[in-house]
Amino acid sequence: MNRITKFVFKNPELSIIAFAVVVRLITFIFYPNTTLFNDSENYLDLAKRLLEANLIGYEGYRTPGYSMLILLGFQNLCLVVLIQHLLGICTSLFMYWLLRSIALHKGVAIGAAILYSCLLHVVFFEKGILTETFSAFLLTAILYILQLHIIKRKFKPSHFGILSVSILLLVMTKPFFIYILPIIILFLGIALWSQLQFKIIKPILIITIPTLLAVGSWAFLNKQNTGYATLSSYFGYNLAQQTVNFIHKAPDDYATVRDIYVKQIEKDKEQLGYTYYSIWDAYQPMMKATGYNFYDLSNELANMSKATIIANPKDYIKQVFLSWKLFWGVKLYWDQSHISNPAVVIVYKGIWFLQRPLIVFGKILFVGLFLWSFIKGVLRKRISVHLLSFIFALVILGSILQAAIIYSDNYRFSFPYLPAIIIVLASYSVRLTQLIRKKK
Image (spheres, rainbow, N blue to C red):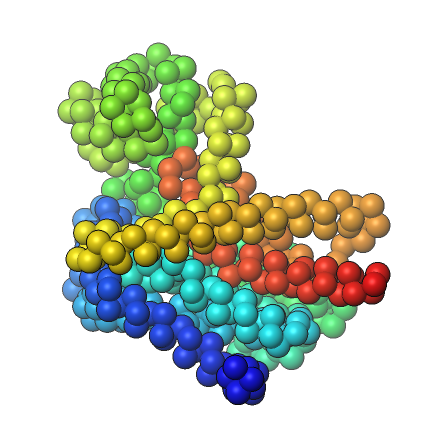
């Protein structure tokens, strides 16, 4: 054991990679298939269109970030999964380097990086054709660039360019992450003003302009193809999911669409016990009754949802809180039918039974640490600009914004933040240990 420990401490990066590879090889042996979900088809279809350079008439379902990753794997799903495994391993390495950069003990940094690699839902997301693994990698890479090359003031112009590309890819993978741009600008302004002053304008433009141009171009393309300048033609459907619990209060101007939706909600509530997917069972009857196409119906649903929210703010706030609670939960995205041995399924379920409450507890603890840190900062009337404060702002604001726009698999929205959350928990665990030792 001493030899192993010495090897790990002497070769931390190699040890993290080795452990991550072993975990993924074991998973491959018992779960060799790639998992496809309802969303996967959209990404694969867009990847095919990008390869053919044919976006004329594209329905605007998705932005192209993740589909570009699929192209990188030559549209071969096994290669895509392999790339995602590599991205997951790189995410672990970023975590280690980040934790070491804030002077955390090497053992804690290694442990946190390995912990991320052995969480079951991390590995299973890598096995699926979904955006979560790519988003987690990009978000952690952004934190790495900010911390090691900018906050520590060891930056070059190229670092701002790499940061710009990372943000662009993240936003074009999940447009929701557009909100991180103003946070980064504010953070950089505070961190670097004393050193750069008005020269800070140039790097800020380098960071923001490419992403804004990409967003504007994609919205323009969708305008040409669908008639609506949005990043995704799903927007209205997502808002309809958010109002599912009080859509019966929608104005009579939307009676046709509303009544079909309410009928489907009541049916799903009775037969399934949940309703956040009801809009996907109701949209075809809606199109038939109204004569709308998919895009026009999305616009109608958006208008109906907005009107309902404005007229019923208390119901909306309750719904946002419900969505916000779901954000802090966790779910395993896998397909048990891909495992031929029932004993292996039992083992995986047993592992998840142990891991799931620990992950949820960690997320709850993160919220508690944010509240404690925020109250302490207010009382001291001092704003600290460092990696952990940036993570707090990034995650908490993201949790609120996602809760404001969608009620669905909110667990998935929280996954890209998981490495950042683990970084905060590891950092505060060391602080707590040091405090206890001082008191002794």
